[in-house]
Length: 191
Image 1: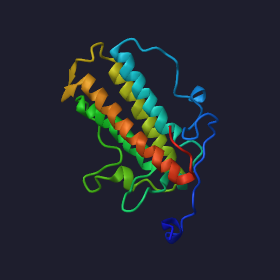
Image 2: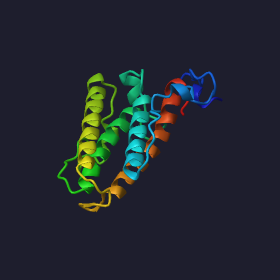
Image 3: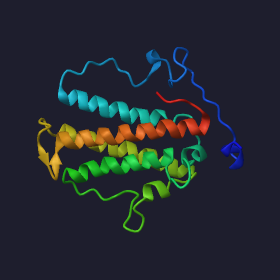
């Protein structure tokens, strides 16, 4: 028996608007993340990678309503696209805590260490808040990084370069999750 039928879930078919590759989000020439900007130094390369992965998270949520954004992956996981947005807002803030800033948590608490995931419920106001928080935290992170000419600067617990690489790694990891979550929601394949 198909497990989706057993769980009363509708079967989802894979799809893409790509006309070249049936396993890609869009045709390569239409990928909005590609700026064609040449990165010639370490700072440019790291910041471009961070921009690319941030845009990917946002792109994976395009066109979804609050219920779809909050839809969980598979039990017992609490992961959802909305949870990812909230989680990445927390991670942007965590970046600055590592750098020595006093940045209290947004969603997580001592009582609920998974508040970013657990509070990701199908409410348009919660979706709007998550996007607002994530964008605001991303902007603050960008301004923070811009203050330092040398990525080798030690800020707080770590060197700025290491913090940027950790942030890029976290986004890259969760972009893979976002691919699978989106495909499970409406069949749209990743890229």
